[in-house]
Picture 1: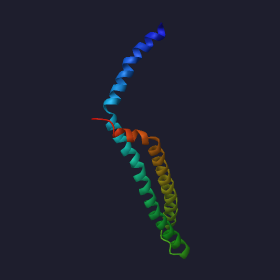
Picture 2 (picture 1 turned 120 degrees about the vertical axis):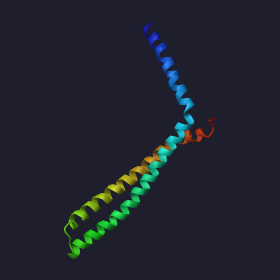
Picture 3 (picture 1 turned 180 degrees about the vertical axis):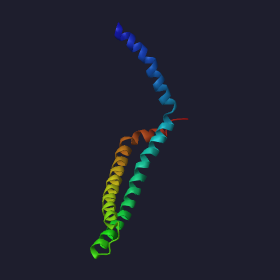
Picture 4 (picture 1 turned 60 degrees about the horizontal axis):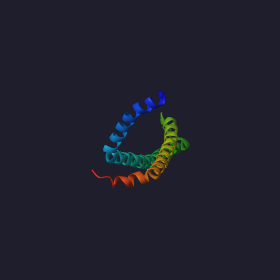
Length: 117
């Protein structure tokens, strides 16, 4: 009897949640798709920036090896090397999540086109 009362109390709340989800379904799916696409953009930008940082690191390491060292050349070389590795990791990781989420929600994104306004 106690279980029946708890279920009766939860049903209206659950129905309210479903009604809200249904009324905003199209907007939520569009927002989700844009968020997933952002992973792709972020990954691409991170990989482009990693190439720039690798060039900077090579330039600074070349200065160190040729003996034309400035005050902060060691610091720049180390930071550019570590930064480029982090950018590569972040870029690859972002693209991985883009692909994972895109494949996970492909049916839902296709379903969005069938939902009427």
